[in-house]
Length: 297
Image (cartoon, rainbow, N blue to C red):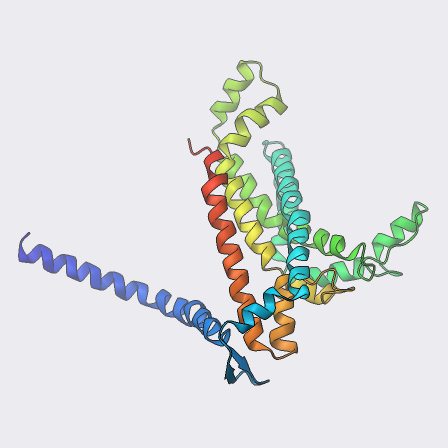
């Protein structure tokens, strides 16, 4: 390799580093530094200002793993994931299948189903808080209209988690719907034409052709939805604040309580690292086992 080629390659490498520098800086400030700071704080007790007070080593992790509240928040998170992720993906898949055809007026429905993506967590939570109001809410109005007793959606321990889950499914519907519709639009019409010529009915075509061909999209949506459910905070903070009786106190809200309400930044950092480890392990498991069933053909 001559000198001119070596110099050209060096210049290209330098240019690449220059172009990557802004992104690396942002990642360093907002991702790597907070992660390292959390690791550092998890080994210490801190005062209300977050300043290091005493080195305790792994005691923070031991306290968390022996805490009943931590396991309660973990189980609440699992319940929240089970209630939101499968249903959210199924509803988005159904709506995408119904609006995938090129009939007149389908663009309007696509726009309507995509709208929740444009609504912030705070705005969406306030909308649903009004809908859940025990006396003024539209949900209880319809229940009384059909002769049913009103429900204390956000204050009854039996209904609180379901109520937050319904709001979350609606909030994530726009993103999931766009992903599903994009996946379906990536399937060639020639494949559907061949299926129709072979006498395949719509349901069989959807199950045996569409589903395998959009499995990469389904897998991506599934992974992203689970990670997002683990990180749920805004709607819980606004609607229930972890109550009633800790029935909606998921892991992220438990971290928030320990770190920013009780000013136990060491415990909060340790919990954040445990949550990070759980999400990382679960994502690796999904890529290791679930991805084997994904069709990339």
